[in-house]
Image (cartoon, rainbow, N blue to C red; front, side):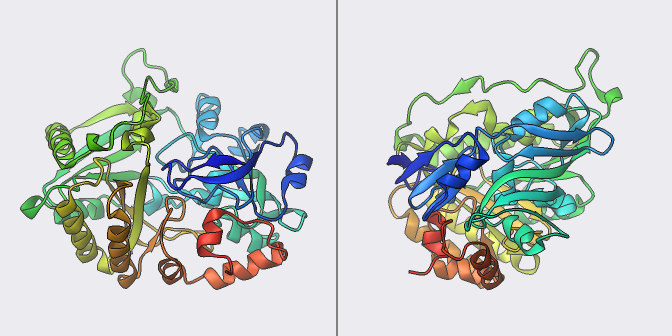
Length: 441
């Protein structure tokens, strides 16, 4: 057995980790208590099998690509970073990218990841045409909107519980350059931030960094980053149309002491960050896609900042009608504690595409907390606000929500479970997350 964790490094649990090199070997690896794992970027326990975990990173080949349509067939272990670096210079990019490029295609489908464009363009699954799936009962099926459609829509956002994704066919976006025209808006409080996001619905990309320790009249002050794909004639003289994807230049070599992040250090960082961003507000500049979409990727092993006990990300979505009041309440409580991270994000979301996809029309707020003290009790308190507002938590980031919170947030759970049962009557596909939230006890 091997000690395994997600990106948040909580929880850390035992699981056999198998690394098959062929699809036949994947089939042989699947038995009771198995789940597939991509590059380990799910934060909690979603990609850890109750008995064994099947690592899919060896499956990273492109099967076919049509430059006329941008349609690509590729293996599920392919990283988005490789996809961007290989096909960007050919004029194509993924339609949707999350906050890290080091996620596998299979993981992106299983979580139906969303990006800064979900309000207008939907999630990753919207651009997937078909999936080659190895089910828990041993069948290998092709699933699409037209063929095995229940399996297709259950797999998008299904957290790997319908089987092992082997390959996918998806569409890429034509892109003239790998640069983004960025515009910054400074918002003095939560109301101003939400008004700015509402007024920016036509922007292709929008996201707000929110100061989660600001209180009083500054509660929810934010910097909103809007983005559009830049054209060639907007680039600086001599700039390559597609900037090279650099490896992270800096790394966190050790687990930092838990006292590193405290209300004083976070408050100081946020004050400097907000003031620096506010000075740029109103103007626009052209930036590489890498810092725009993946700012944290520039710091290798940034999860070690939170110390050896790890961290928890609480990402909720609140339906539009209740969003202002509930987000204000959450931010008030978080600001009083003063120990949330300096990386808090607010975005607008649209409708999800999979049966268990996280997004719904409203606002999503993501907050990181170091694992210490009474944080679990505090997050239970926040969960109650989310449930009362008709919201839910993102399974790809979750490591601790209760079954009651989960069931309240995902009304299609019964339908998903019926499809999962039909694909895997013996219950071979099981993760630590499914054991915690889905499976019979």
